[in-house]
Amino acid sequence: MSAAKAAVVGLGITELGKVYGRSAPQFGVEAVRLAAADAGLRLDDIDGLIVSGGLSDMISPANAMTLSLATDLGLEDLNLLTVMQGYGSSAAQTVQYAAMAIAAGTAETIAIVWADAPLQERRGGGAAYASQATSTPAGWNAITSTSGALTANNMYALAARRHMDRFGTTSEQLGHIAVAQRDWAVMNPLAQLRDPITLEDHQSSRWISEPFHLLDCCLVSNGGIALIVTSAERAAELAQPAVGVYGWAQAHPGRTGMRNDDFGIVSGAARSGPRALEMAGLGLDEIDIVELYDCYSFTTLITLEDYGFCGKGEGGAFVSEPGMLGPGGKLKLNTGGGQLSSYYMWGMTPLSEAIIQARGQAGERQVEKHDRVLVSGNGGVLDYHGTLVIGTV
Image (tube, rainbow, N blue to C red; front, side, top):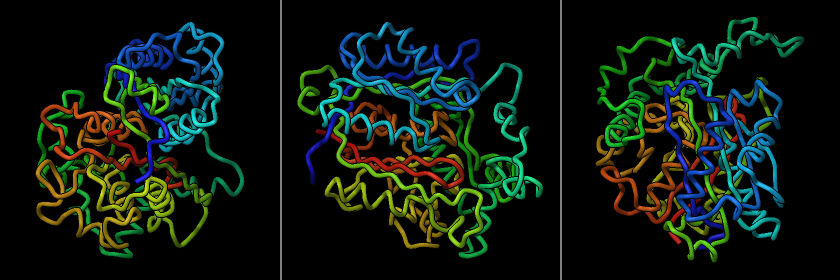
């Protein structure tokens, strides 16, 4: 096992979910303040700031939130200031970048923040992302749109259907993921959805885009999450149990919108996961907890396959095996409820739960053995992937 290359020493989580009347930058400012206080640091101890945002940030100029956050926080004489956007893989990328910057001596104490505020009062969660379908691409890029596949729901549904047609994966098997994650969310005070569900509830929930039912699809949330990253040496002097960063990798297939035999079958996780584990000097059997990006139940399934927890095409049977998932299961997967039941902060959802578990601060849902946690981030329609291996120092 390799030594920690950096450490997460602060975690700040604002109120999440249906929280109205606040902008993404306002959530971001609060999250950074909370993270610094959590670490026992002053704001002027921070000499690096990495910002990433969701839908709100994409609507405005890419660097708008970065510049406003630095000013609003009163951060001066920063050695590092940047915005990063890899969609759902951004969180893993930002931690990697921070660890590399610290190792290079570029900065000593770096705040990472992700914030978004797409939800509006008296409008459903689906409406928050409806704007994605209002601008039709031109030329060859419009071919998919002309068939009616305008949203992520449609495109992920196509990916899932491809897997089903190839391997016989079923909707009921996807439902086992949704039910197990809700069982974890019941014990998570931060989760938006805490009422238990059954497989029958999953199957009877309305269709969103076949083969996805409502309970196969992630939440939409307002809020912000921030981390403070510093060297492993300095982490020992701070207020919270240090969470070491042991391994990372990215993989970006680069076939967005193209016809290819791998669509819905293999994702960037197949390259990113093994490389991150290799950097950490660990095998899958040494991982205690797995926190995976789950914008859809299918995303969890394909990532499990690509990381090697089961063979390709065996994901459906794996997740539906009795005693595999859920609080009492063999695989401690998405222990906070994930994006399906807890909150949707893009890649910060699995990462924040991973940090909470690694610290031993998850309360009722705390996993007893929590030394090493594998974290994934997924972006686009299986287009971008980031992996982290984190854990106790």
